[in-house]
View 1 (cartoon, rainbow, N blue to C red):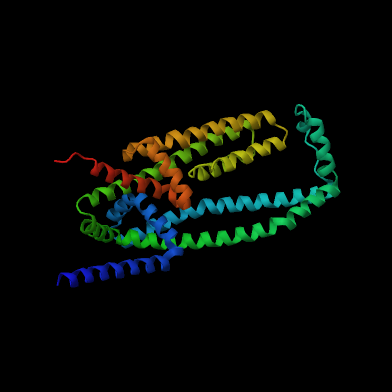
View 2 (cartoon, rainbow, N blue to C red):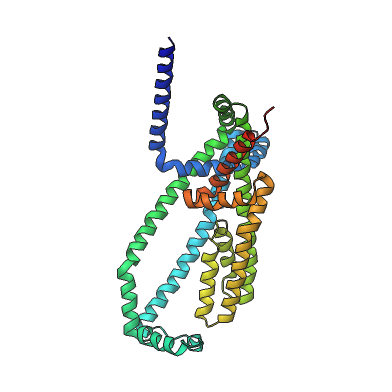
Length: 346
């Protein structure tokens, strides 16, 4: 009888593991959508509870909050796309003028110490004449621009599909959340014992603290750098500040905007303003990403500074953007398990 029971247990474990692997295989392309839905639900769960009490209908609250989240995500993307389309028209006009007249040598280039004269002559030879500029533009168009555009379109469509499934999953998580939480607690208690609920609370607190830290610090970076864009006299400072705030939610995302702003200033022969903006923005982003964010997250999770930093950047490296939240959550559970195991025996 004992041998039969052991054989049945092994067969049960094998079947469960096989079914779990098959489920992961089937859902593989949709796992990012499920992960994002869980992260958004954890970050906004308190709002969901207040809205449910006010509307007295979990379904209506779930629909309303999902629509609001969708608008908050899609709205900024639409604004960026529309502004990008307007700028694209100006870029096309600029490319057309470069084809006809060439790319004039910037005034500041000749003022660069030691290599200014050589650089200016090279620029005039390879970019200044219409023939050289036309050849450069044609080479850029034929080498990789079309392929890059096609790849970008494919990525945009893929991300929109993930966004659609994320919002659909979020709707059902909002509606059936209490039942899912109860079932998860029962399963965790059965599999891991009494400490399971504490591990779950640590993971949830890490996700919520990471979302708050990334979003709040990102918006603050966007506001401060938006003022800096105004000071240096850039056009569209509000749009640039908004884009900085959105991308600053991701570590190393803000430099994509302020470096582009510095290049615009360089193209306008405003070297001092570009240098000052680059130094100020780099210091601000460095302090925010490496000190302010970990401090905010650590206040809510009781995680050490280095542990948080490794969770954010390690998660980003391993899982992409979703890893920004998975990394700290996983390390929070690992730290909770370690603290549980390190307690002195009674």
